[in-house]
Image (tube, rainbow, N blue to C red; front, side, top):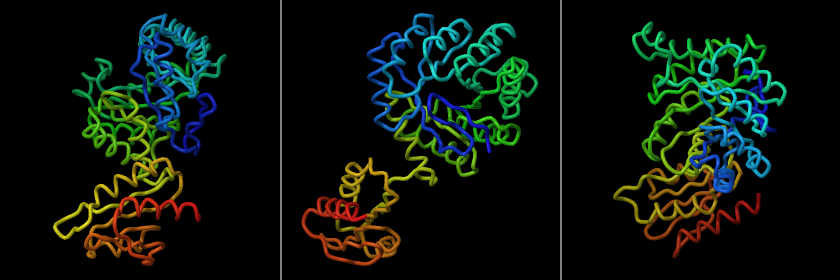
Length: 347
């Protein structure tokens, strides 16, 4: 089990539930725009939000953002240790830096001392695209071992400054490389691990890459917090992360099952399933709802689901707890939605 750190009031590691993170794409100096996006992310299921800090004005903007933010906030900083200190003094809850690029041991110690005073944990973010040149030369390019070596260098800098409130990430855009690096880190240290496939791409392709990489690690019992990195509006990221966590059994909520359909199908499975997914997306109950198109696999799935629709010719059989209870006709999407509502109300 990894050690536990606190980001605001949110625990990461030490057996706590896996935490969902995202990153804003607003300018941090745009206080109202940033707060609007933070609220959107919170509504989508995000628990911790990160903001880029490219200059001192952005670092100081946290004074206004933090006081009204519904989520704990992370400052993402490179190169300038003074911006890290300013961000902490203005209320951030976590810092993302690479100690090796902020100017030497004296600057690292100054940041670590400030972090200790303000109870701010630090994430060391190793990225395959920015490994040290000597590590690349030594390993003939980017490798999992090289990423871990880079992480060790940064960890030692903080530990030598008597700071160990650390979270670690080792991200690559390659899924196999990402998984290998995190598996190595999991064997070698007990710091909480922030999972992600960096620069995964657009929603769709990027979601699949993230699900494979993050999901494989979570199924191994590796990972304490996740970010799904998708190009575009970050509001898609928490929903994708939540779907991954639900798929591997680490989050509650309704589990939707629906068949892919074929020539035997005589009901509109897609529209029924879409209606149910939209209407009950926010329900946090461990309930399985199935929509099946025909009698081949339908009865079997109906038996395994809490509530299910097994399609016939322009009609469907409603199953509850594996047993057929009545026939649905007419608007099957509406009829199934009503049946799910009744089932949830009776729980």
